[in-house]
Figure 1 (cartoon, rainbow, N blue to C red):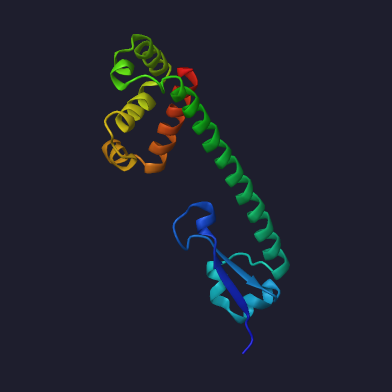
Figure 2 (cartoon, rainbow, N blue to C red):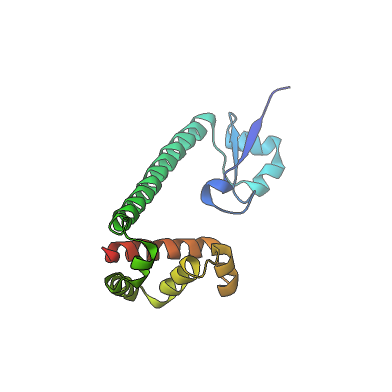
Length: 162
């Protein structure tokens, strides 16, 4: 039995719900494919041939590699900022750090640069130890939105803490 077409779910690539973007790949021409399997025409208004599908996969791979590279750069940068700021107070005891008025002033100044909502989320996560999910449920927002907001606030806080 010869394979007429293959169907792929690419919705994960676009962070959409499952089976929302289906791609039909076939070596047959589109008109011929739809005449053999008319039910496909209702679900797919286009199909890829094998070469187009391989080209899509290559482009997608390059895009994902690029996104991953930028994501890792961001992580490394924020870790470097964090360690640079922490090494200044490494030799002090905890009680000295807590009573250090210079440090308190720096923290207040760095916090004052944050916008009200990101500042609230940042403090809830880092000082009150709420999880991203708990904050999202409290605000009725998406967890990813909260995560990105807290990370942006953290980055800005560390930048201004210097």
